[in-house]
Length: 291
Image (cartoon, rainbow, N blue to C red; front, side, top):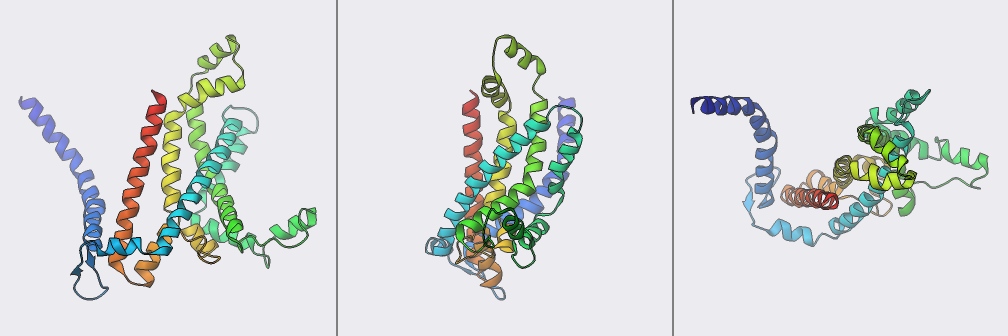
């Protein structure tokens, strides 16, 4: 009994630093955000308790509603495009052969660039004044006039998706490649002996055994896309005509431009609940698929 108590005491002591970090940097700010969301919180002066009025104001905010639908649309597109491209890249570089190290490095290099820096880089590339993309396409005969990369809602979305894919595909490739290399070679050899082709092995061996890795990428990709801010703030500024405004951009506008901190806190609580629900749903789907 004394040994058990001593081990429990050691466990509490070892976990205390992590518990303090979680409490100070997560639980306390979360509690403050919830309390702010229930008050009219001026930048200067005493807060006034308003109950659920801030949450009611969110429901009446048309910009926030449209931002939700746009953010969901962007999340679906980005998650699918990123996974398909990253998985194809991982299949190309999973086996060691001459030159594969250079390919892996080239694929991963964009991940070393910060998202804000990547957004500014691609903003310059898209510019018809200083960027080379339109000139190259005209020289190749693909188009007859400069492309307006960010001037229409559809082109702005797909131009942003292209930049995000360039930035994150190498990172996802590395995770997928690790998962592919963890699959025992003997499983594939046994399948070949039984006459299984490439697609059969992909459907019956690779994808099922990659389910934990795919689940991790889904959580990372969906969470990152739902919290998208820098790419649209720097590339499109939410335009044209507020067609590329994301949820976090509305939250930023509410807090730092309109200085309506109570409503902004309510929005952040709603976004947090949506993220938790989305991740739980994803993991439950993946687990059911593996049963």
